[in-house]
Length: 388
Image 1 (cartoon, rainbow, N blue to C red):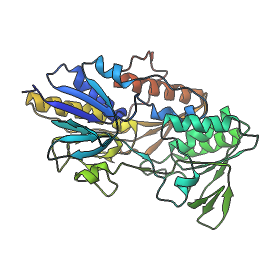
Image 2: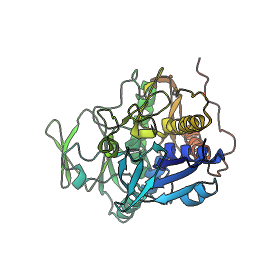
Image 3: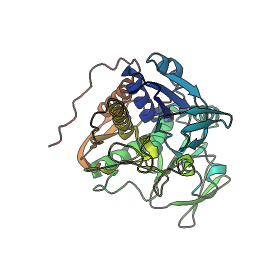
């Protein structure tokens, strides 16, 4: 029985919007409402491009949901009442729900290191990226930009800035370097060698082996006591999740992510599903899923099947996922595709140069299409190797 069943999706990122779209498209009698503090979907994997001068696409939530028979409410959820099953929005209005899909994602961690919140900028939203570009666009030659982080966000930003704003003096602080070539999330030796050649070609200075202990006005203090001065510091070193789940009484992990079962339902409150970065999801082969749209979108798909399966009283499938590759843009005409095994450990196969850039762009476009936006992506530029 679905009459009157209200499904509320909290958060319109890659995972949440995918879940909302699939459920609404199913034409069930259930009501589907998406709630987000923003008015439009943000292509998070392109925020570094916006910070370097690109304009985002207009991907409004309201039209997207209405075209599928759902609805959209813009607002910030300040509290979740699990016993009464309603959300407090902006501390004023409330929204009742029968099933809640929690998809609030993650944000850059600026609180773990002293001074980051006060002295650094992040690439968390379109407004911040536009402000950063406006600052960099008029910056005098040799303005010193320090980018802190060893992940894809930091690497992509460093290369994008160096290519499109070549007058800047760019340094990337990678901490202890790229992850081990035989560990999840790492890069192969060949990939590291290629990245270093790209940094050299673009004039990006690289610091490896030292962690930032604190930021002061205009300077980063490293673990060995040395300092690195900067005019602008971009912080891209680690993520946190909102504390709303913990505050509401949902069972969460040490990181604050909602603990889930095999169908992505909360282990403590089965009428709450968690997807994307805000969920701790463990799969048989790959272990704990990393925070990325690569894992978020499939979670959104499975969450929709879980909800629709419950409404139809049919058996539910467990979440299954294995990794295939990681895409890194290195400017507009260069890219790195690191192929990985099912546990996200790098293999020696990589694609680089224009070939890597074309595949990266194809994946960005295909991701949008997968959510439900009308995008003409064409045929894939190449065929990835088949895992044995």
